[in-house]
Image 1: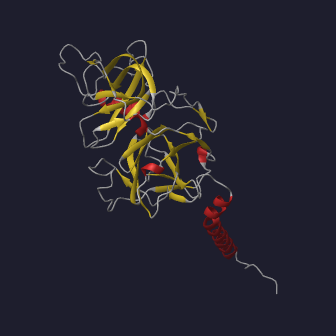
Image 2 (image 1 turned 90 degrees about the vertical axis):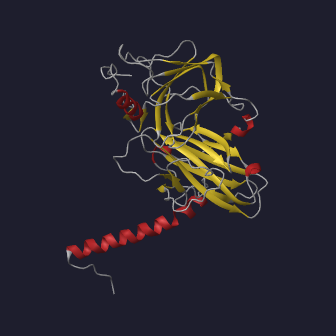
Image 3 (image 1 turned 135 degrees about the vertical axis):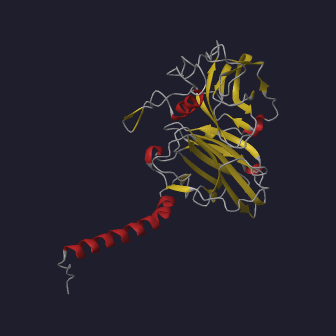
Amino acid sequence: MPWILPRSPWLRRSLLALTVGLLTALLIHALPRERAAGGLSTQDAQWIWKPLTRRDQAPTVFYVVRDFELAALPARARLLLAADEEYVLTLNGKRIGAGAYRSGAPLDVYEVGPLLIQGGNRMLVELRSGRGAGGLLLSLQDEATGRQLVASDAGWRLMDRERFGLARGWLPLGDAPPAFSWGYPPMGRWGRPQVGQPRPLLTESLGQPPVPAVSILPLRLDLGAAERGRPPGSPVLYDWGRTVEGYLTLQVPADKEAGIALLFTAEDRPPDPLGARPADSVLILPCSREWLDARPRRFRYAMLVGLVRPAVAAVLPAPAEPVRVRAAETRVFGVAGPPLRTPVEDEVWSKLQRFAGVAGRKEL
């Protein structure tokens, strides 16, 4: 007997919606297996981030953390990673890598076998985004067998501030909220992940002493003759006395609020914050006493605008890695590039406006 559709239009629409829903659920259930069969290098890893809404566009910095057990240690373990916009990676208390997203760039690759521990391990990734949104894709694999040991998914936990013993695994995660999953690659502007060349570990540069700034020169933005001392957030210039290469590090007083600033760098002369575009933004986790740049740079002068208190600056030499010049993205999916001021610049500018003489400036 042939199947007859109900005559009622409402019943037909309901039946069609139910059928589509069932087929969609079956397809989603089969996606991980289909991806593994399709040969994705990241296997079952998903793009994750903190939960947000369309209105969440303020600069953000936070941790995602994952504890995992290893009954036996692999001879070699390969970690694949991409993070939009920036990341600093820590494994079992050792800071092993940092990087920033570049459109079309392959995954960052680290050999982390010697850093794994039989039994409990903790992986922690500091994530930063000047526009609020972003994503992390991570896959840890046994190179000999190809077995996936850890993958980024909703099982990771979110931490919104630095806490003593967190990176080393001394502090339990407790009721920390779960990460939000955007979904499996390929998706959005991130596309299909490709494996890059292995990168040196930051731990390989720990034997080299950081290069401190030769002098710290506080500057002022025309605050008027009545102003005295250094107003919070006013520019501070660091001079190394010569051109240096590596990762800028800052020692800062712990604060309950996230630190936010603009970074200007130059080789030949001190940068002018009123006439130059910032090289990058600085987002510091609440209660943190240290900030590490996600990119190695080449410069003599570094200027910070926006920090409430001056920081002690030094440069950690990059471990045998060439310094790339950051290229600005002009278009994403045919949409014009970023506005004249980023959300971070607007945030810093709003803090500076309360000081006399600064409110009259229209641009940094």
